[in-house]
Image 1 (tube, helix red, strand yellow):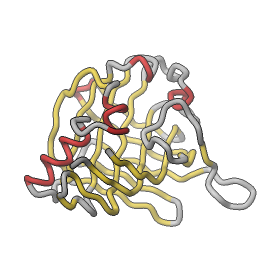
Image 2 (cartoon, rainbow, N blue to C red; image 1 turned 90 degrees about the horizontal axis):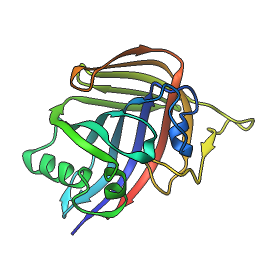
Image 3 (cartoon, rainbow, N blue to C red; image 1 turned 135 degrees about the vertical axis):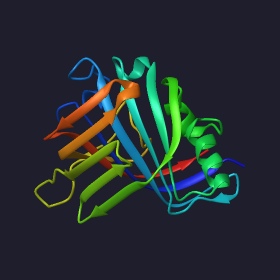
Image 4 (cartoon, helix red, strand yellow; image 1 turned 60 degrees about the vertical axis):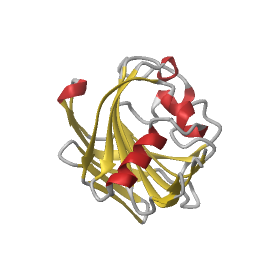
Amino acid sequence: MGYDLKGELLEVCDCNTLCPCWIGEDPDNGTCRSSLAYHIDKGEIDGLDVSGLNFGIAVFIPGNVLAGKWRVIRYVDDRATPQQEAALLKAFRGELGGPIADLVSLVGEEVAARRAPITFEVRQGKGTLRIGDTVHAEMEPYRGPTGEPTRLVESIFSTIPGSPAYVSKASEFRLTQPELGIDLKLQGHNAIQGLFELRG
């Protein structure tokens, strides 16, 4: 039956602003260490309602984003029922095709998949992301002369295919993920916000 998901994205990484990965260039540090989460405002997977839930990822990208070989840990919202957890993992592992599968094709290894409390808040353009004790990020989009968020469109890489991304900066980014060899505490680095509609 596939999936139909609408919601919001928060993403942060250790690149400078803007992360070169989005335009297909090599990451600033040679690798990219990142975390992101999707908040599903409204959606279903194989006919199962998953509205209101979050799904997160911690990722180590060893070089150019388009070369793949990513190592990831996937996080399912701990409020999900067992059936919702299975459905979310099925979709976000790319097993149902569509744009999510295109993104997942870059993953070389799933190191782990686990449940965690995920906090996802956007208020007046400011975003807060927490995934258990692993991730904490605070971000805010850049804005143009009209006050509207600065948008990135037609980028060669995107975690929200087909949607504009709001170029942002993280005033705080903490990512502790020993299984991926990551222990970061940064300020003033890249962040992305956006809305998505994903169907597969």
